[in-house]
Length: 218
Image (cartoon, rainbow, N blue to C red):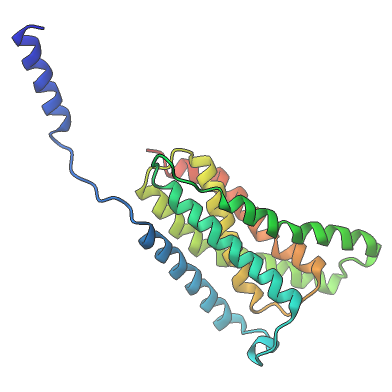
């Protein structure tokens, strides 16, 4: 290689890197803290606006409510963990735990389907359907704060699979939103929980899968 070519290459490299600035690596703890703060804020807002379940306020716990709410909380935590890990495309990063949590929470709509089919026409009375719609709408609305926090975090990172990251971010947000409103909802029926409490998770997962890849292109 001639001296002229070598100098040209060096000049080109210097030009390319001249405007680069060091970027601070994303810290997992900060991302998780941001997500938990958003989830806590959404939960407090729901309780302030709608109130806490009477049995919880009295220190009593219904087994079905406790199990289902715990599953949604676990799903929100596992999915959030995965999203934050996905924002840092490092070799060896493992973020498959959300699949197991989704599978466990998925037992709720499956159980709702089985019980609902056994009940026949009386599965969802109209008076309960109206309350179910409220659970869905408020749960989905409560999801938006966590969803926004996760999208902001993903935009700061460099996820290699934006479509999967968006899907999992939606699952995390929907699970936290459902958890928040479940602290108010007095219904312990498995059909109600499996249908209306799971609906925000499905809706937010779809929303995340559709819009997040467009927001975090890099």
